[in-house]
Amino acid sequence: MSFRFSFHRLNHWPWFSLSHPKNSALPLFADLFNEARNSAANISELFARGRGVRLGVTGLSRAGKTVFITALVRHLTAFPLVSGQKNLLPVFRVAAEGRIFGGRLEPQPDDQIARFAYEDHLAALTGDDRHWPQSTKRISELRLRLDFLRERGFPKGQSHFAIDIVDYPGEWLLDLPLLTKSYADWSRETFDDGAAAAGAAVAADWRAFAQSLDPAGAEDENIARKAAEIFTAYLRAARADAYALSTLPPGRFLMPGDLEGSPALTFCPLPLPSGFEIKPGSLAAMMERRYESYKTHVVRPFFRDHFARLDRQIVLVDALAALNSGPVALRDLQRALNEVLAAFRVGAANPLTNLFRPRIDKILVAATKADHLHHLSHDRLEAILRLLTERAIERSAFSGAAVDVIALAAVRATREVAVRRGRETLDAVVGTPLAGETLGGETFDGDIEAAIFPGQLPADPRAAFRGDALALSDGEADYRFLRFRPPAPALGPDGAALPPPHIRLDRACQFLFGDRLS
Ligand code: GDP
Image (cartoon, rainbow, N blue to C red):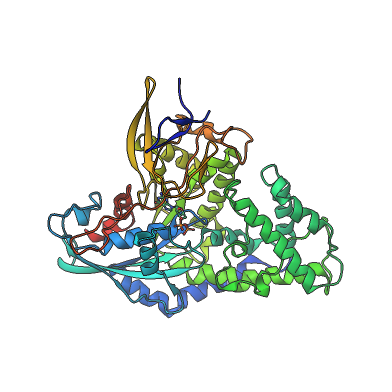
């Protein structure tokens, strides 16, 4: 007999079991390209690159960017190790070889970008009332300096290396294809998406409202505001835990950054019949103008000023949320990742990126929150991630960029146990489920520990993608991943919280910048 997911309160027994009109692309990109090439910042960066990398950290909302950066920085600022203390990053070669003798934060190079609130996030994770930090809402940056011994290259001996970490919402990458899309084309595509099986129920209110509008009617600010609000509510509902659908562009509707409430975001798709002519002064013309201005003032500057300057990139993926919802959400995540990863493609495969030339030479795609699963299932999670991204990765070379795929947990909130149940042994994880998490009709209070057997991921990853289920209930699901509280921090000799336990954070460090520290 095999078991579906189940849990056991550690201080209770028994088990609870559960059964384009105006957008010719070329001039746009020619000027984009020139701006990027001529910028003094870029030239000085070229000289500085020998001693540092600009590392992009992205992923759709709730993928784990904030937690990843906070844990990464905590580990890399914990050097030198107190003697006798275990090295928590054994696969990160420079650390394993004892060649790092200092790590600290330094003022960031770009004054116009918000600073990543590292200290606040660390305090959230390790304070008395430990909780997960505030998630990424906009672009932010942090510079970390490592002092290390260089063994190879020139000059040998004491050296230093800067890692400029740039945290930005993955939703913003979804905007790239808009640059060559007219308002009418985008409107039609978004309507079709909303009518597709996955989105049909959740898009119903917005579609009904938009269909009641007259695109040829006079422009009207109140109508535009209301339409944009209902459209945003649809995008938000699709992202909610139960559905876990990935979002559609425009990326700033859910992640507005500093643009919240601005007219650049006060538009939405309208149902335009094919051949519809957009007349000046009409509602459709108003929406089209704002759509074009979103592209000019929001999308282009992001790709030119931020994206084109990255050297290395980690893309974080919350595959477990999509698995919780069902195969429709998983396929939807696959589509979104295809679009996210398209931004890294260059050459004939993606003329859009040719002109601002992303220079990224290494991309790590990482399934986060691997601590929700026993390590025996990590290979299966990686296999699912590989399937989620293989089309995007294979479809074209990333201009020679190296790509790797791993399952990791930046912060490990669980430990592992083997639980005997009848004649079977279940490989479970023990942690404190977050208050409000439910399993099999039980609601957790955020204090009690439980041994969770989340169910077995399929041996053949393709099985997870088959079927038409969305928003699966406990009764229908084969696996269920709960969210846990962050672990209680272990304290060092000085009473300060030690870096949190992790799964494969060191492998991520080695892949992303270990080669530059040899
Ligand atoms: P962001 O929107 O990409 O910045 O996502 P966050 O970093 O804020 O992560 C969203 C949520 O995922 C957190 O509040 C945690 O509940 C969970 N999470 C993220 N990383 C980890 C991890 O390494 N382990 C565990 N157990 N949960 C994580």
